[in-house]
Length: 253
Image (cartoon, rainbow, N blue to C red):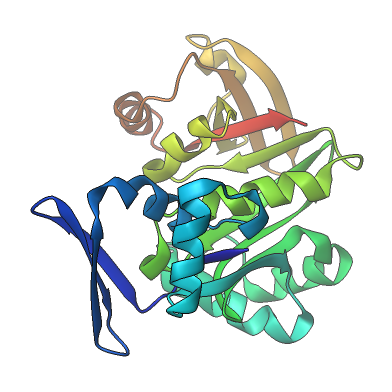
């Protein structure tokens, strides 16, 4: 698979596309009709899947060294520290520490998947089994390469590696990325977690409760929702100050 080189910048201007190779200080101009093809190249393409003008432009870009190899695979143990550094750099909050993730990496390396651009790790997804489902624990893409579909590519590869082993994938979504999982056909429910004594399921009779689990002193209540709503979530957090509330997205595979 190939994508546009990380040193390449392009923009539309006055009816054409201006391309700059910022490393080699080369400027190019091509017709605006190639915009959708460039957008496709940015998301990663297989040369053999291209047709007509797509293939001709690919060959021109290849000759001009404007393309890079894009690889998606399970990470190696030697690459684990790089993956953790990427998570630290890109995530506002780390839920699980490196030691915990490394223990699960040793058991389930097929669910620690990276995207590499010319051998540079630019994206990572981590996961492991929980009870009756597979959990996406963390996912991050280098900010330089976001909005190019690499996050979705990581999730699809994660799903591919889970087929035949697990029937369901769950992921707890940070508020700012709930739209990402909706686009990937994940269905949401609301998780309300609290310590015993702070609340009881009776306090949650405004909701349709799907499941209640207890883990030591913690109670986890799964609640049905029609669609994720950040305004509602913020309101509920004010109402249930002692509870932790988060949208969880689930997909059967």
